[in-house]
Length: 568
Image (tube, rainbow, N blue to C red):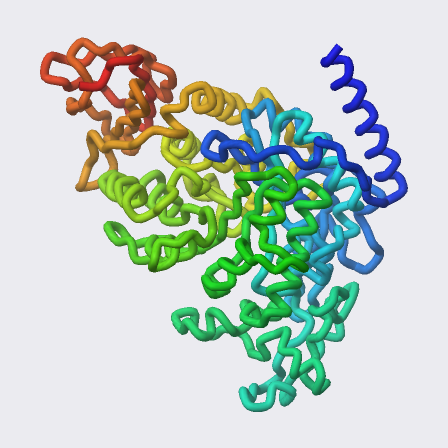
């Protein structure tokens, strides 16, 4: 009887969603399928979607007749939307992902003639509390949330707190003592020439009242990214920089993003350009006790989400054997007194080192350093999303090999952190923001949702391995073997409770590796092979001295698991 009730409730929810979506309105429902409890984020696997380039579920919203739509042009909208994501949930879930991270769905500047580029990506907001017409309706977004939650999956919304779109600029000069001088309106902006949401619509310093309100930093573009003042207060590539020290701005941003948790049931945030906002802003954003616009943590808890995840983007990698930027990233997760700020940050230092080692020819010892360092520097490494590429950098396969990509996938699926798969990786994409659907940019005129594709199958095997073995999502890494002179062998053990796993790769394209290394496991321990890339899936037995001897063919990767009582 309980199952029948559940089916009936879900059927009714689906009907309500369908009616609301058809009317372009919100659902206004208290259904539990919107506000579901938070998961243990350590155990999640994320699929990251650029919504406009993923799937076109509603062709009627593709073209808003403002010259912003052209699937042959990477700078313009292609037609992907929220309904498209909903229609492909099964495809994503079968890959093994448990959460979908989507680019900002909010109303955007559709076209900026100053840079000849459009806001299809979602990071140029004109209204933080509206769904962009190209993405669909609020009802579509709620329907996606419900469908994900009914599938046992979670919704991560990308958000921006640093800036809006490019609605003003400084023309041939800037006077810090008179922000109205040289200020100019971006009159060619489409579809609006200013934000439509209060107080962000107060962007004109030639109006004394707006100037006094100080919603924006009246500044030109950043010219020196090593200048902290410019980094925090100037415009990033022409995007209008919000005055996040202003209590009015802080309140409006808390209200704007709390809205998506309360109304759509969003389960987590990815926060764009975090390095361009002071750390103190995020303490307020997350934990403010303002009753009229409470912090995100309070809003989430009021909606039954006791473990809301918010992870920031600190776009910085570290040089080999250096952790300067890692420490800066950590400063956005905890202050100098150890107080929590953001729950997590993207693990850009690991991304940088993975690229260096897997397709840059660097010594594997650099990866050993990075793994050990991240476990020491970061307070919560298990909550930090790990990745091989994304929408801001070249795809791995743009200059890396498929074997190198597969090795990277093995690594992020077996190391601490939340693995993120960038859409299209499973279909061997090389175009950074190519479309998955036939009508979109650089699609070749065909859909790319092939569940039999080799990389799709490979990733599905790895996600199953990770989800079935907590040693990979909860375990502690210990480096067992590495090469300091160049490409070659690399091995580590993951340990959790009484279970251990050994992971080994060979990054060389030319030299097989015969290696013997200590495991820290009992003599006679049997290590069963779970994954074998470019090699045989043979088990290992720990020798009397605690070592194992392995043969690592070129570009190979292996994962072995030992059962209880393996550790010495």
